[in-house]
Length: 380
Ligand SMILES: *[C@@H]1O[C@H](CO)[C@@H](O)[C@H](O)[C@H]1NC(C)=O
Ligand SMILES: *[C@@H]1O[C@H](CO)[C@@H](O)[C@H](O)[C@H]1NC(C)=O
Ligand SMILES: *[C@@H]1O[C@H](CO)[C@@H](O)[C@H](O)[C@H]1NC(C)=O
Ligand SMILES: *[C@@H]1O[C@H](CO)[C@@H](O)[C@H](O)[C@H]1NC(C)=O
Ligand SMILES: *[C@@H]1O[C@H](CO)[C@@H](O)[C@H](O)[C@H]1NC(C)=O
Image (cartoon, rainbow, N blue to C red; front, side):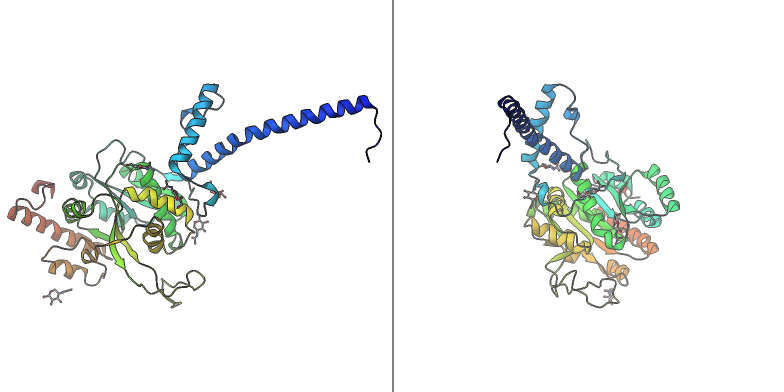
């Protein structure tokens, strides 16, 4: 029961009530924009983009605000990102970000190499063999090294010098460790989709892999593009029915709690694989919706392509992954089929590289058309 109130007070109370109601309705009306803005902000963080371009100055004019809202709607429709369902946000900030590696240039292939801050010698070896800048220029190819952070000031300082000199390092702010390799893979996909989306192919390798870059580019241009096109491609050394290792002493031991089946669905050796670059932004987007799993090869080359319904194409005959026989296999490779070599010893990389270059020169002399993109003088 209401207490008895004189009618004048009742009138005032009703007025206050109506005002409150109107006020709440107004706030309600404003909310969607605020929510949309917040969602865009999250998206931009997730996509690694800077905040909304210049229009983001909400405090500017109303015209600008209207443009911003239109941009927001278009962005949401265009990217079709559902921020509510993101299970694996990848929002580490960049410690090193060479944004201009690909921008405005005609580049055929971007190569990213998984490495760790302390692996200076491995990176140097690559830079002075198959990753030589001037050589790669002839093939319209660029290289970046991708890594996380370590809590070692000495290493991080040395890295500063290295990067000041070469400017080819992408570094994100996550701890660089074995169990975090999946972050490295996602970091690379994200970086390439944001900064090298203008390239045709993307090559991934580890820092102990030797690539016959002459043979690879020729193969992509003359066989792959011709037979398979430039889209929806992942070419690799495909594993079928790879057993999940349950031996607790193995480096690759995977407990049942992490992954219960006894065999993996098809995936690729992470040592080296090729993507058509259109895959990188779709795979990065897929990673936002696929729970983090530390077995990076399987996560990046199995789970993500499967999410976007792309099957791996086998290139197994081009790989030698057994480090003990790798040199002899190259010597014996008279049919010149091999492109990717796992070479644990740095010295062996140099001698194998010399052999590859010698053969290239011989081929160019013998057969004029062997490699149209390179002239003998380029190969020093
Ligand atoms: C990103 O992935 C989600 C989940 O699979 C999908 O619904 C969405 O269409 C994708 N967006 C783009 C731009 O590929
Ligand atoms: C990344 O996103 C997660 C979840 O939204 C949040 O908890 C975390 O603070 C964010 N990290 C950074 C560096 O922004
Ligand atoms: C992975 O990186 C994150 C972010 O730096 C860190 O918190 C976590 O401890 C790392 N995990 C492992 C297993 O190294
Ligand atoms: C990359 O370029 C393709 C067209 O070539 C476009 O459809 C896609 O949205 C671009 N991705 C990003 C992340 O900008
Ligand atoms: C290389 O070829 C020789 C002669 O055919 C053979 O004896 C040797 O086993 C081969 N080496 C490897 C690693 O395949």
